Length: 198
Image (tube, rainbow, N blue to C red; front, side, top):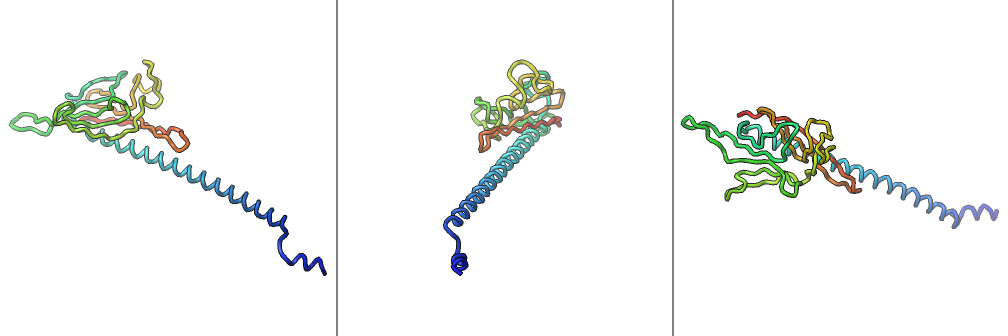
């Protein structure tokens, strides 16, 4: 009878400690799983944001260049060379039989190499400069500064933003880079070909 009364009083100290240890292990494992899922979600969100930024900036550049007169585009570099800046003018129309040109525009990288900008009348008193992006890499993904075509696209030593022209077509290449929470670099490269309308 004594054994039954003793068994009905509850858990012993050893049983309680074992139960707390098991609960602690389960909670620790659960915390690790939740933190890993949060980190993966954060990395995916950062990668998607970088993809969106690359697409948006590439669209902005294409939209600006598509209205340019192909004859005004400088420098007029062709493969195997490329340029990290592009200057052009847009025809606003014809007045009294003469073409009316807009202010000179340019797209390029700032001196530090990471900021992609669009500018109008650059260097003049009335210049306008807008930074479109500040995550451009020094060189295009897969490219090394060695005089060779490392990424096998027909061009040598391309910068993170590069332009090359063939007739009325301008090829725009862009590589963006951002660091995730663990210090790993996420890299996105995009390319488009724009045919000048004018």
